[in-house]
Amino acid sequence: MLPLHRGYDLAARSYRLRSMAGNVMAIADDVRKCVLFIGHGDEGNFKSCGTAFLLGYKGTTYLVTARHVALALGDDPFSFRLNLRNGLSDTIHHDPLGNKHEWFRWHVPHDPTVDLAVKPFNFAFGSLGYEIKALKGSDWILDDVKRAEEHIGPGDLCYAIGLFHLVQGTRRNVPIVHTGRIAMNSGEELVPVEDWTGQKETVDVNGYLVELTNLEGLSGAPVLVRGEFHVDEFYTHSGEQRGVSVTDTRLHLLGVWQGSWNHSIHDGRRPLAIGVVVPASELLKLLEQDDVAAARAAFDAALALREAASLDSGKG
Image 1 (cartoon, one colour):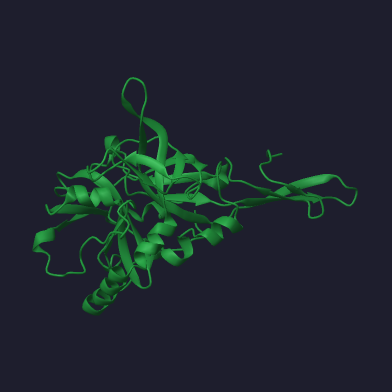
Image 2 (cartoon, helix red, strand yellow):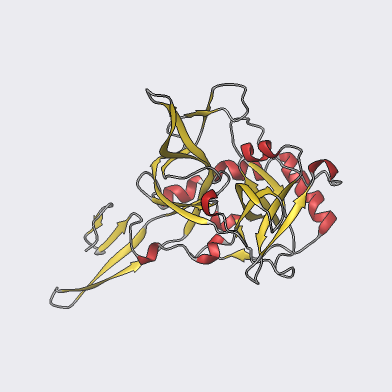
């Protein structure tokens, strides 16, 4: 019998459990297809420097990453590497200064402490041979209502999917699934992190703390979490237990990986096995920001390309 994390309903003979180990916890390969790498160079000499993922919202597909990744790229030319269905990859080169479209730029939150950046990225991936899909925002984004309904909080299993720079992939992107657990909910306390703008030593941010180890390059990755799953016991007429049935719940986008938490520890600064995740609710605010909404309208009018293939949020 599985160990319990939640209460036991005697009448319904039903357990409401937190996410735990087991085959039902595996991440479907389809989910990894929303991730791509940002860097420099082309297919034969590509060097990744960060992670991004695709999210569909109100008919527009967005490239999402951490704000500090976009700031580090600056106005210099850079590349997106996307996987192809033929087992190889392709790079899309982008020169910010040579861009003729105002809407095709990074959009960031008005709040300077929110480490997020989005860019419209509505290309017909399927017809162009790319093996990439977008999370469908309305189904995936974890808002406060969903978090309360599924009792998501400390101890729940979560996954960050992105770049592991020691094995980035030679011919194509190889997103790695990092696994950890929520250590602290967003909103409980502001978290002091290193100021990525360099203006201060630290800045206080609203975010989840997640026990998860990673190396540089995961910044901008989607962090997914499972809510509860249900274990129902079945009994014979004589009262003998016959078995159990497990029903897994959907994955949700918990937020965007900001980075490992650095903190002063006696002998200097070193990374801890805890990371900061920008809440998905902050991403939703950014997508509803006036300048982003205006750019979305201009983008749709200018391109009118098909939305990227969407993932069914029930997968995973």
